[in-house]
Length: 337
Ligand code: G3I
Image 1 (cartoon, helix red, strand yellow):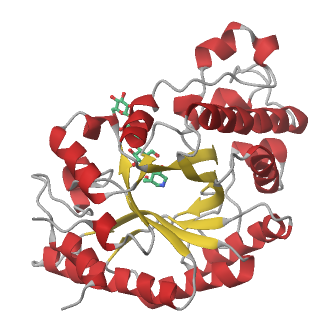
Image 2 (image 1 turned 180 degrees about the vertical axis):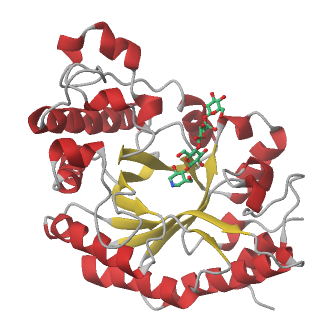
């Protein structure tokens, strides 16, 4: 019988997976989620382009000008599934440059017209966060334990904030504002996160700490999410140092939010990937035992064939739902024999 990650790590942290509608249509995926995980993230269904209700918003621009309408049709099945099975949720994601409709940033919600100004976009941001949090808290009280408030705000190269429509319309305090509003409306028990990929790379790391410092000083952030779309090339020592630095510099907890490990070019890539998965998890456990508060560990999907990077086979089960060496690496890190 397959060992269960959520049982092995019950005393350590939540163990989660990203879930999509495609998975919930397959019985073998459903049983695997129930058996292995006690945390879920909607892979796409709680992003702004899923929640913003374009039709209603456009039906009465004056009424919705400062408060775009939202609907929750796309994520409901997943939230029901989580609730029924005692699985907690990470909310993903509120303020992001991507998977957010462009019309949101225009005064009349019309991309051929003029951009909204700072005051209007601040109102829309505040009301969007408020609407999502109020809905989640009234329909699913206690289900969510964390939310990605801002996602991927750092540029890929060098030290800079990513250029995006949030930055262009509001200005470079848009991250501070997002966290201020999130703190104002957060349901009880929810941790507020900044989430990013390659957040261990030194330039990106320093930039993130720079722009999150005022947020931390205002007491408006609880955690940094390390997405961790990596490969065996990722040095676990510097990765570990990054986690420690976020914790000491910003006083926040840490979550691994989107782990996948792309295969390398070796012939025996399943073994290399498995060895790396074990080494990676051992590093996480070492940091945790040294006092770095790591509270959840999420893998970005179930089986390789359904991964966003399916040609790199980065997950822990293969297309036939067989556990890969990478799965057993995660197991062995806790119970080395
Ligand atoms: O829903 C449409 C469907 O109607 C259409 O037929 C189909 C045809 O391509 O596309 C479907 O939408 C796709 C969606 O995934 C659902 O499968 C989008 O094209 C595709 O772009 C989208 O990709 C998602 C990606 O975010 C978008 O940025 C991935 O599934 C999702 O895994 C990925 O997740 C992100 C995290 O949110 C943030 N961190 C990075 C991570 C990986 O890119």
